Image (cartoon, rainbow, N blue to C red):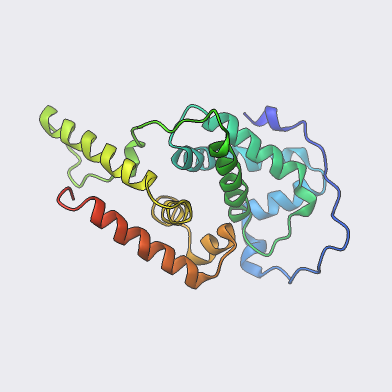
Length: 210
């Protein structure tokens, strides 16, 4: 996949851009951030390394948002094309993975807005639910787990979009409240509220199942 992204153009910085706060030492110490800063200087190898390190993560996230694994690879390519094309606009005020999640979120939402897209029932990835017993379940148990996965997936898909994004980032991508706030461009308190409402809705929809 990395070779697909090597052909990218540098976007010009918008006029009148406001000064950015200085990056924190923790952000500068993040390896992905270092790679993005190198890519911003035109280092194609750094851009390719950034893609290799994050492509699977972003593809998984996009697939969860659009509810379909089939377009995930193309949408992930779009995410990194945008990220590298606008590398000179990246400011290390937050870890670069947070920036990638934000681009991925917008890319997924734009895809869902397309008129030809029809939401379909889907089976989430195996890691969406963790089973305590590591031994393989019996066939009748497996059918029950598959049905549970389907119903949990449908319940997630039925959440308002910002609640679904917040819960996906927190529960599956292990993002902090601060990262989610940056992705959604809301306050940390708004993130807390989104997660609380999402959990309340899911408990109501899944009552008696889990």
